[in-house]
Amino acid sequence: MDNKYLPVLEFIRDNSAKVIQEPTEYANQLTFAFSKKFADFNVDVTLFPVMRLHVERLDRSFVNANADLFIYFFNKVSSQSKSTYKDVWVTTSDVSNRDLLLVELSFE
Image (tube, one colour):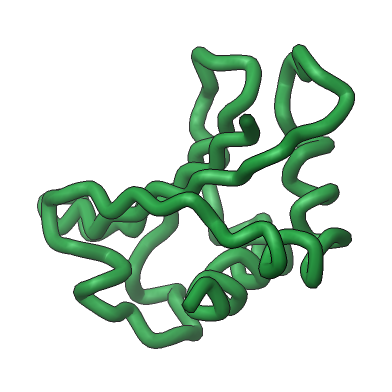
């Protein structure tokens, strides 16, 4: 169920002072990192595997139900190659050697 991502994405949107947006190399992707100590949501090991990547295509019904949130992130894409997107992929990881959580969004 994709709802597990909602508190994570809302945290990123609502806590810009605690979240670093990493420089991007791709026109359709955003990468965020933040300290685990700031997380106000359950840091589940299945969602944030330690030193591994978790990649998932978000269900379109979840994306559509949270359209304002995804439009917010899509508008942050540095060089929009398209005016819209069909799919959203999310990549997450617990980068334990840096005490950071990583979240990447890719708009396809």
